[in-house]
Amino acid sequence: MQTDAFIATIAGHSDDPGYQPTPDDELRALIETFHQADELVARLSTHTNSPTRAVLTAITVEHAARALDIAQLKVAQLARATLINELPADDLTALRTVAEDPASFVAGQTTLPQDPRTVPTGRLQFKTPADCLAGMLGIDYFEANRRLRAADDLLPGTDPHGMPRGPRYPQLAGQLADGKVRLGPTAAAARKLEKLRPGIEGRDDAADFTDQVESRVAESVAAGDPKNTTKLFNRISDEIDDVDSAPRPAEVRNKTGISITKRTRHFTYFSACMLNIDAEVFLAHFAASDNARTLAGNRAAIAEAATVTPRTPSSADTGSGTEPAKHAFPTDDASPTTGTDAETGQEAATATTDPAPNASPATPKNPDVNPEANTGPDLASRPTIDPEVAQDSLCALPAEVPDWFDRPPNAETFDDQGPPPSGIPGTENGSSFGTGLEEPTPAQRHLQTLLNLMRSPRVTTKGATGLPISKLFVYINIETLMGMARGAGWSAHGLEIPVSEVRKRLAEFGYIPIVLGGEGEILDYGRERRYPPESMKQAIRARDRGCLKPHCTVPPEHCEFHHIEPWSEGGATCVANLGMFCTAEHRAVDKGDIRVVMKSGVPWVVLPEFEDPEQTPRRNAHWLSEQPPLF
Image 1: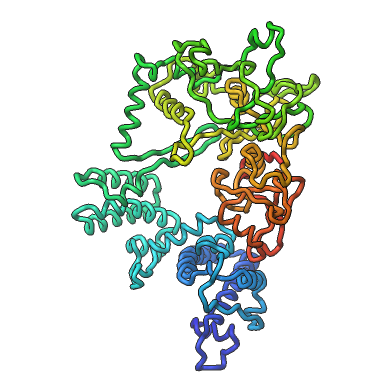
Image 2: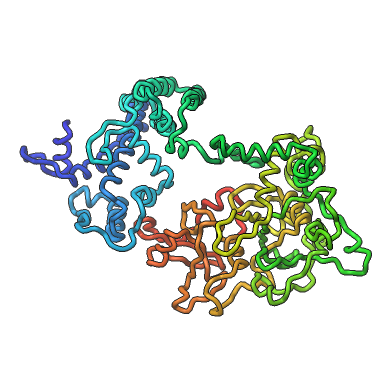
């Protein structure tokens, strides 16, 4: 049956020889085709026991799947060309209703909303077509963006001037259209070629070299061996780099930077690329750390900086008649502290600004000569905070409470999970490098040099552009911290931190715990102030982890704080009335497109109807996918 005849049959115009299909009729035929295909596959899977027919059915479905891969790229290209992100909310809701139950539309009883005839004003529902595709299709934003990029690389389109053009990589596109390769590896190869393109265009033989490179890549992709394809790209990259001319700005932009390449339970792998002039800065620091005759290269100091020494009782704790200081109080800009009873079962999040690297063993210990030298593991020597300053923390000055390592006498105790791997010298001393106080390897010295630089305190004047100051947030159940339950801590960026490491950092650096929901916190400023203090922000970050909207991946450092009951309408500044959103979603909440409801002190999000017809309150699972829930 010809396509036009099939469309006419679905539209009810099969008796009209002069009928011309409309876009709506074509869409009806497409919906009915998928419905009938689903029905046919179900019938074949139950009505036949023939292996020959099973093979032919499998081949046919495989061909259809490959065709649908390309169809997704074509639809993504169409979505961008028609600016689907400019549709108003009412139209998106109506389209969602039709998609959920298309029977009346296929029968011609329902019409689609009219296309906008004017340029939209005000805030759009979605910032880009990729955002709209992700929201309406229920896919990841990065997947939507990958489809658009693959469409640019592998499908015909238009150039910036609106003129038709062929596929950017015609040889790969030809293989994909012929069904010889799958979309995934082909699109990945096209992305890698796109990264190499600025370097290729800088060559004198750019046109010929481009054809040769694409031919070699297309042949490797067709062979179906990803490892050989990766090796081929490495060889091509080395060949491009080995030229006399300076790299072009586009090539520098595509190649330089630091990225995470792999994450496992205990390790994170980075890959770095930079210009030689920048690499020299690294190498100069590394060379200084390799020189054992200098303070920067002192082997013992570097090993000590890489090792967290467990706290041991001192005379100040036991023999001087002075009560041991169970909790340390921060300065104005440090993290707050609070106490909690071990039996309350509340959750805790530990936070601090990383301390400066430990001084050399030769550094004087006299605090009058070198005040910074007296910052060891003895928490009793830390100054207490002024009561007025404590008003900007999560708690007032607490009464005497159990130490973090005290346990109820009858509590069940669990050992830390994951003993150190055998055969690694020094792991018994608890070194984060696995070397105890032994001399670190050159690679470990280089890493510790970078960590020391980033941990060093930096002071900048107001309005000046300074280096960022790192803060380490670890979220952990209080029972796990105290050894009454198995588990681990999790960093703000989703990295698992062993509970033993958390305890050692607490003992060494006096990290300040935030106990959410415990006694004594200042969790409510009422109408006294509009903007939350840093201590309150830390509690909200510990609860929300990042942007509250489901599937949003904006980290907590880039989020804004939203009054759930607006400040202008009498809303209070308190943890129970504040939540974190990225800038775009914050505007959507203010506009009313997204609603926030509180459940047991935790904010849940109700998405617009066109994204969630069921209007079910949801949490952002991106921040909780691999972590045990704290709330």
